[in-house]
Length: 319
Image 1 (cartoon, helix red, strand yellow):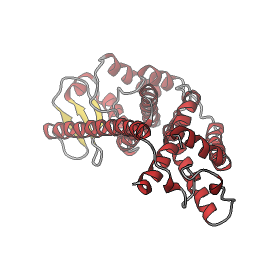
Image 2 (image 1 turned 30 degrees about the horizontal axis):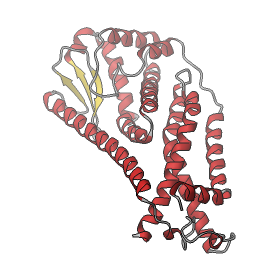
Image 3 (image 1 turned 180 degrees about the horizontal axis):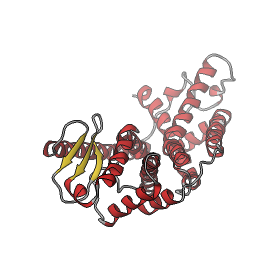
């Protein structure tokens, strides 16, 4: 049992340490993802911030494994014999000597249970939405990727993950003229070409390790960035004022679509403002460079201060 739980417990300790560091950095990282940014820069930064609670824990585990291999190959001094027999070590020979106690196992089980519960909830939600989209597809008419719904509400959205479809309602056709309908259709085609349903699903899974409030903030900004991206693509074919007018007309109906890739999704007020007053793209990559520098510094600190990390782990588990 010791040989099984020792490595797992140490890896869990490193993962949780990386997650805690990521949460401490998150308030500062979120400041760089505000909606005042150009949509391309905002989407790039949102991906990195969403990855932070995944990359930091993984970097600590990789650092520990590199240390273990370096000790085994004789590249660095192995000070494991200088500690007590049950002191935790980041090396292949002595790592299995560490066995966590019941309190530590209990805490790890709770953390694992919470993450598993959120993962199951997300999977169930995705499954229910796919069933809803499938049911709507069965009730709709039309061939090809565009489906017509017999619904009085003005609906326009993309549904489906592997084979996404565009859904337009009869209510939309009744309230908009032909040109306005083409603008709405162009917006949904942009979602289709950008594979936004797939990207949105991946982004939702990345939010699994984020705190609820942080996840809500990132989700809202991501969906707004997704809609801004589609709006800009439509604005390449139609005048910005016309696109903004159609968006305003749909927003007044206060109709909520069943999926995130919708003509009325995201921050509608901001979308209208951006259409009328475009924001230039900032070519600076300051945040991207800073992001990787911070990861590199933490990774280097984990390698350089591995003795302190081993001592901290020993104190936490009473070894």
